Image 1 (cartoon, rainbow over the protein chains, first blue to last red):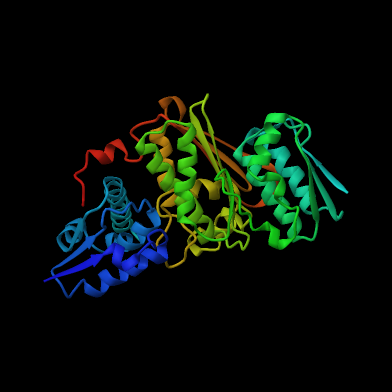
Image 2 (image 1 turned 180 degrees about the vertical axis):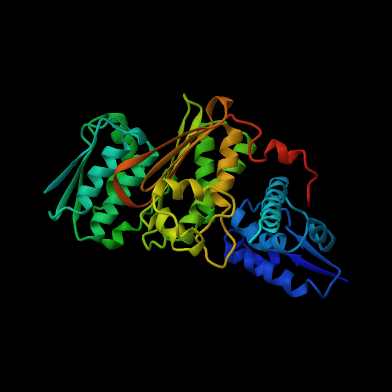
Length: 105
Length: 294
């Protein structure tokens, strides 16, 4: 089963701040164990905000592996700049996750 | 009357002098403050944002602010065109700056449309690749978000952008008069050991470092640094009594320069100098070799 999040319909113009991103993040968390795939449609709108993407995907990348993320989430109609930014943010958080895992407490 | 006499060049190189004199005005026992720019011949975004911020701080303390305009015709025309002399003339209501140009703005909250406006203004006088535009868009968004997230100031931030055609670069400065990086970071137990502003500034650019307790953050300055590294630009960060300058010019790695300001100030200044013709931009070469995740 698939769950669709349309960014334009869900967020409107509120695609900049962490609070904006949290709306989408909460939807993903709510559906994570209920569906096979969560499809996020950015409607080709340019986001260009680290805060927005990091709030949506940052926590997920700290909690889930790269494989788990790509298995569960599909991203559609995202601008190339945003795609690069999104990948960069997720890599940053995955590195942070690896570092935390490797660092003895 | 307390007269603030400014030097010939209102630039970041004279930061110590400008900050020292503005701070003296803010805490002056005199009610009337005169910002005297009559001897000035040039001003960069750092000086513009800091002086208008200081004017606002003076007014908040009950001072009456006025200006002696620059005698240099070119500078005077520029400062007039961006509404510089309007700051402080009125009372509280008049501080709601409504100028349509993007070169100087004051924010009490995030305004996403402003970022596009400022990029358009820069683009009108300077040829910039799409990558530079996108990266600057991102940088400004992030710096403004940082201000509202971390500084805990009710006064918002001041943003000024200028393009220098002959130098082929753009200079964007974001100044807030909030609690500063050291106080923001040291309020979090993880960074409570921090005792000086320079260490705090250098830590703030590292991945995942943030004062946002219980929330994710700490990528803003990191990403700006990555952009400037590829762009071969520069960034100055001043906060409290610390001043750190990263210079990625000439592709020879980074030259880091740091010093203590002669006088500390409450707040943070982030001054970016980006090359307008720099390609490559945001994505690091090492990361481009990776398979994309999405």
